Image (cartoon, rainbow, N blue to C red; front, top):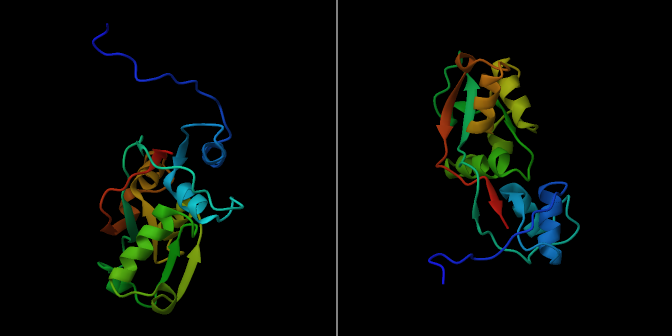
Length: 178
């Protein structure tokens, strides 16, 4: 008898990424798959890139470090809170993105802000474009997450001193096993 018997065995397989992993778990061809939280959300709802609701799975746990969302503005602007953004331009990430859309939208709504009515212009674009366009003054503000911003600063794509964060979310899970 062993003190710590094995809990099971695992045979890893290569896939095309989170979409394929969720489809495999849904169909029963895989028991576990690594999937980003935003893909889990769109899969559950049956939104693109999925063609039906994916409901035959459950989250087992988070694998990578947590992330935090934030709202970023140009450092030279006198913007300190979301209430200072009235009439400004604002960018979200893709509408299916947890970090680029869902969490920041929820935050704004808790502040009594309906984006389409509050901001002069609302766009949806990539995380990198948000950080770049805010630091260039093309956009007044945008929603992003800490790991993207930090990576862009480390790669020299933006300078930390060119923008400032006016809101940070509580820590959120990122990639998970389904």
